[in-house]
Image (cartoon, rainbow, N blue to C red):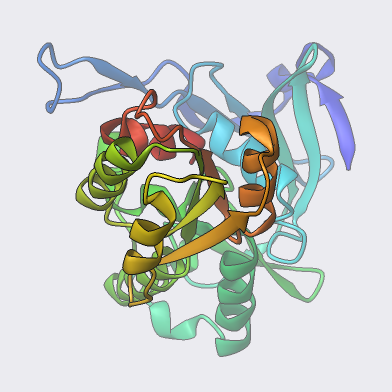
Length: 298
């Protein structure tokens, strides 16, 4: 991938196609109608048949492009992408080759080939990222291949229902239906593992169990390592050991004292979740904070 320093680009010799570098959109959902930075500009280099898209550093979708690029989202979907624009070490734009629009109408979705849609869907599944503005005017043909343009229009599936905050709307509607179904599938397969050691903590073990079950809607498993208890903790654990569509309890019965660190290690070994959360049986870590923690991890 070619690297261009903004200071070295002679943009004065290029045609300014889109001039929105200082654009700010008011967010009516905020108390003070705070502004959202949508600043970007597009230049046309006729001599080299290249387009330069330059972001305002505060542009709300600048990081979207960087994340998608680093995840390989564009490797097969954007052969027109030939360079990145830097301001010192910061990526603030990209360079694409000239191509022919798939259609002049954003509503002519039927012209998008099924093979390209299949490739897009495969990439979405591989990366958990999606392109929200899938209209023919954002697809060009270059060197015999189809390529997305407007490359910052990429979001994580976890943001599917938050696009309104960025003044964005998924197009076409049937594509949103596909993404909604895919997100449900991804979420249903996302398991959270709670690892929890316990020694003679029956009272706290009960509190912990009920708090986790009360505060969590995600698929999860609870991995208990009983550190040679003699207060009925192990019997209680086995009484709850069952599996249904939402959770599973796994139990390690340590036959000799291993200590908290050893018990944590054993519980970790049986955990299978994509997220692993360590919790002390005495609820030092509050279960009601779990959702906030998971949101941060996303």
